[in-house]
Length: 172
Image (cartoon, rainbow, N blue to C red; front, side, top):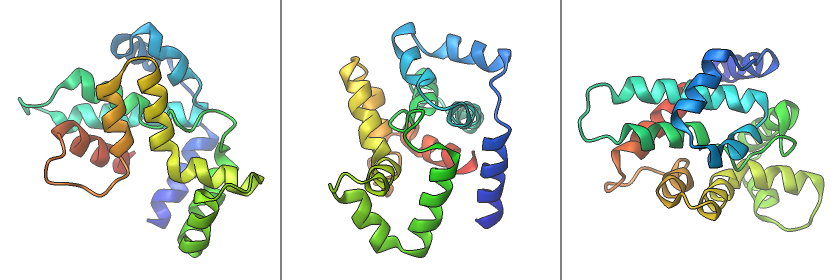
């Protein structure tokens, strides 16, 4: 896990969105979703693009998967964490804080004291819900439901798109 987090940090520092990446966004996201995607920081955009590519590869030849829905969800799964909300430093801090002091970090994330740490931890812990609300506000309820649950424990009735998204996100 530590080496995976180090890799995530290094990827964030050197993140760049390529022309090929832009083509993937254009292909799978309708224009009304572009503002949500481009509100992500560049490192989060790159993470979303890796997640989308991993999700498409995992979907492989499965016939029961809605590939368009899956790819949209992968590209949008972190839109509740827009540029300026967390950043590479604060995300690294949040990961460490949650690992070292899980109860205290969760208390900050669930609290409403209005301080910087509480705001950062709220985004860290609740970005899936925040993103789902954003997606619902622009009329993408199916995507919202999957994004909302992507950090929840798996359930027996989870749709295949959600199961694949979780795995692709872990890989990215």
